[in-house]
Image (tube, rainbow over all chains, first blue to last red; front, side, top):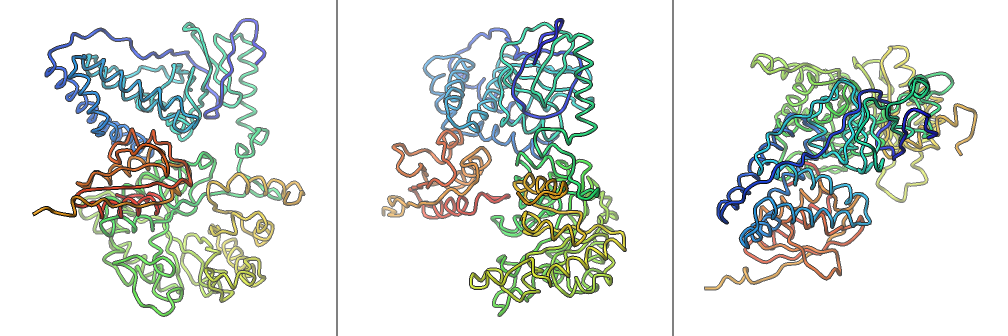
Length: 539
Length: 100
C-alpha cells in the first residue's frame, strides 16, 4: 500500500475478506499478577481445580456458540483430558514447581513443537494450545475473566486471538480482526470467514496507538488514523467491492455466476457436518444437498433424535439465512445399513431403498422426521425425499411428517413442517413430474442416468455406455426443468454432472439454473459458467 | 491362572485417507475411541522410530500423520484385539461423524 501522508499503512495476509472502518481496539493477553505458590499438594490441587473450571468454561462456550465453533473447542477439551500431557505437568509440580509455571512450560514446549512444523495446519493449531494455556493460567491467578468490551464496528488488533476470545466478542455490529501473527488456516480464521468478519493476519509490528482503523480484508491492509483522502479511497474500494464483486481477483469472490443474463445459483453438497470446513464452502448460495447417511454409520446403532437434531442444527446455524436442503435417509441400493436395510434382495438398486425403505420402517423414519421438524424452526430448512416413484409416496411421507409435527407441538416442543421436495432419480418421477405436489425438485443425475440407461453405475464394464449426456437423460432433465419453470418451483441438480465442467453447457441449455456441487468443485464450476457466459470455451 | 490374552500383542495397519491427515478433529475422535478400551494402545506412522500413546491427543496431533500415510497400531491388554479392530475401522472409514 502507498501509505498516505497522514496515516500509517500495514500489509498482512488475507484470512477473511470484507471491509471494516471503525475504532482501533488493541487487545493484549493480560500480563496478570504474580501468584504465590503453596505446598506441593496445594499446587497440584490448584491445577486440578483450574483444569476442571476451564473444562466447564469451554463447555459453556461451546454450548452457546454451537456448530462449528463447538467442534473446534472440542480439541481443547480433549487436551484437558489428555492424561499423558497432564501427568508430565503434575510430575513437574511434584518436583517443586509452582502450578502455573509447570503448566506454562509444558504447554509452551508443545506450542513450540507445533510452531516448528512445516505443516501450516499444525502451526495454526498452536493458537488453540495458547488459548488453553492462557485460560488455565488466568484461572490459577484468580483473574476475573473480563469479557472483551469492543465498541460497535471496532477493528480488533491482537498479537493472535484464540477462538474462545473471538467467540466472546459480539460481532453483530460488524468490525474486523487484525492480527500481528496468526494464520489464514487457524480456527479463528475459519470462524471469521463463517461469520463474514474481515480478517488480516501476519501484519508484523504495529504501534499500540491509534484511534481509528481501516481494515481491508481483500487487499490485506490495515491503515491507522487515516487521512480523509485515505478514507475516501478506502470507501471507494469497499463500495466497488460491494457493488460488483465481479472485479474481485479470485473467481470465488465473484457474485453468483450468471449465464446469458440469468442468475445461476450454486449450492454445495455435504456428506457430513465437517464438510463445511472447506475454505470455499462459504461462497455457496446454500446447501443443495445434505446427505444424512453418515448418521447411520454411527457406532452403537441408529442415531437418536437428539444426535440428529444437533447435526442438522449445526448446519443450519452455519448457513444463517441461506437455504439448507436435507435429504432424508437414502439407504439401500449400494448403501446397506445393518438393522435398517433389507438383506437378500436380488436386485437392491430396484429394491426397497430411499423413501421406499423409510416408509417401510416408519419407526426409524419418524425419529429423523422429529429431528428435522425441530430443526425447521432454527433456519431456512428444506427437506427432500430420495428415490420417489409415485405421488402417493410423497403424500405418505408428508402425512407422517405432519403427524410428527403435530405431536411435537402438542407436547409444547417448537417444531414445524419444512418445505417438502423430492429427488428426481426414478425415470417415472421425471416423466410424471406434474403429478407431484412438491415445493421443489432436485435431480439426482447419478441414479437417473443409471435407471434411464439401464446401466449399473458400479459395473466397470458398462462405463462407455454410462453417459450422462445421453439424449434420453438430457431429455428428462429438460422436461423436469421446464416443469419447474411453468409451475414456478425451483429445480436443481445435485449429481456428479453438476460438478463436471463438460456437462455444464448441456445442463444450462436444458434450462437448469441451480446446481449443487461439492465445495471443492465450486470454484471450477463458477469459472466454467463465467467462461461459457462470456462466449468462451471450456478452457 | 494367567490370562494369556493379557500378554498377547495385537497389531494392525491402516491407511489414513483423511484429506488433511491427522488434524484436530480426527485426533480427538481417535483418542476418544482409544480411551474406551482398557488396553494399552500405541500408534505410529509406519516406520517411525517412536510409538505414541493413542490416548494422548497432544501426542497424536504432534505425530503429524499426513494424508495417505500408513498408521500402525499395536495394543496389549484384555480388550486389545477389539481395540485394534475399532481403531482400524475408525481410520479406514475416514472418521465418520458420530463415531466413536
